[in-house]
Image (cartoon, rainbow, N blue to C red; front, side, top):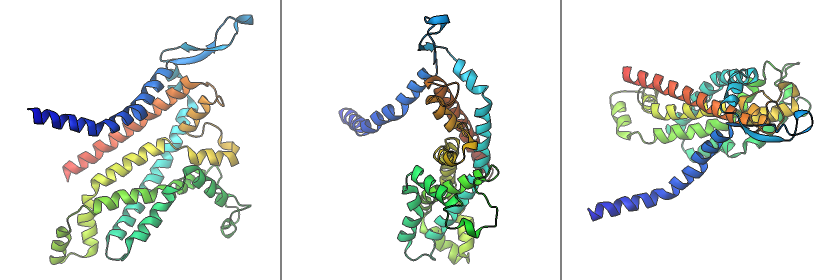
Length: 300
């Protein structure tokens, strides 16, 4: 009994650093955000003509009602969902293809290729967005002159695809590592047995490897869904050169600019409400996708 208690205490001590960081970095911000969303900065009413300074006033769920009824919020949400429907499948397919390539016998020294594919993820997001903005600007871009005349990669009809290219370049290597880690856990005996039965490398990849990395694909897509809802760096940098996009182009931009007072309603209360609503939508989409994949897994 004493030994079991000692093991339990030892386990909790090992887990304590993670638990402290989890509470401080994850739980506390959520609680503070929920608390802030219940307040709004309103005139105190003690000034001339009933005005006065702005004070934090408890408004209950009014900020959530404003967020739910905000046309710019839902327009921005529609943009990021359209963006995700195009960008996420392309990125996941390319990442899986690169992982299968590195896991095959075609690449003799995969370490250098693995580093090269992952390197874009190591570049800070703002720096990467500024680099692509430079490449998209006709006056300074080294390759725009070779595209058909009149091509504008920052026009209203193409800017979403341009940003999708930016994030695909950044995160494909990251997702490739997720798939590659899953591929390297597959027992090699399965491949040898398949080859003895006459299976080609293509059949091994499509009939054995891809089905066995379904869990990794689920993780990669879930992370991509959350990242899509939080799209921020790319549109902020693009908006600096394209003011027509506005400060409310994506939900995350709307939340940030609301907090900074650049849009109305402003303040930490509305910004927190927007952020929490985004979290709920991202969580709902992740749950729906997980249930769909689980049903497909049960059927197969």
